[in-house]
Image (tube, rainbow, N blue to C red; front, side):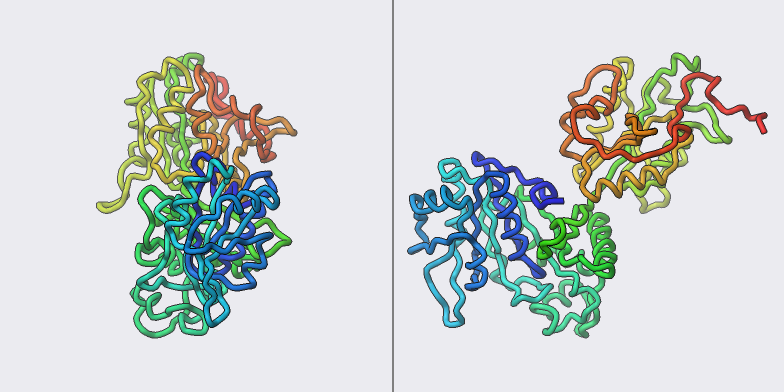
Length: 462
């Protein structure tokens, strides 16, 4: 998966994203790899640092401009972008250690105002330093973020996980230990602690401007142990309400993003009238379990963070059939299954889909649309869909002998607006012909649905 897609960057010179990278573990690799991706798409990008930059980093850019008194050389910048598509901005002061000063945040804010004239698709910058160590905590003066920042990417290199939080492996280890309430001893950093550090308001999320997105990156996960640890860290981030990326941005032999993680929801569509069935089929039983309960249970077993059941024509009996799943599991536990009534159910399945989408929590990154009447589905299929989404597919649907089937299907949030525009008696199937679909081969029996009482298994059959 490329960085542009995984970061959901809006490459638009009218309102370019300003992406600030902080933390440790490969910031420079992310900045310049992202810049190359943008240029490869025929667009323009400006990179910069608001701290200090080494000569090695300067050499990674095709061209750089030194700012005099932090004044933007707009004509020279336009010429550089015309020729190269990518220009690095640095300050004009060289320090005793050979590093070059970066630019001030107001320079980046001013550049945004000229982005349309210069046709800049995005601005990408490093906003702190880490002494090349894989994990850090910010100092009082860090990070140095422009007010125009729209996306903050705190990073950790996975070689820090399992290593002691000390001066050899971490920048400002005493601050890290304090943020994590980990005492004073340099104990090994755990994956969950890495996630907490990147999301901490005084750690990776420090200085997050109002309205900006936060997306932690667990980088250098290009070995089996590091990937396993990164998955634990990413799952912890999701549990804390944040999406996350697992990356290997410095490895030119692989895609920069290995996996994306985020909250997934399942919308169980259970609002239909069951006209052909002649009774509420949602409460018909298979193996002693109602179709509604079975669908909700499978959704809960999928590993999704949120499950929503949309009821309608027979709301009372359907909701009664899943009451045990909708009840809190304890005094301090949230409801596992959320019930939403669609009072416009007679206008078709699309109204139930919109009702489910409207009920999604803001942090949801992907949704599975699950009909209530496929009792032979396996939760493993839903888990396989989530795994394919993490690997970069934006629509996933089952296929029987090469032919796509429309349900169940998973949709990335980039398709939520299109899903909400569907009308009539149809669901997400309407998008399968319009966009690329990752197919999961399954047997036809698993996808069989219940339309009439004759479709139910014979309880007396042997």
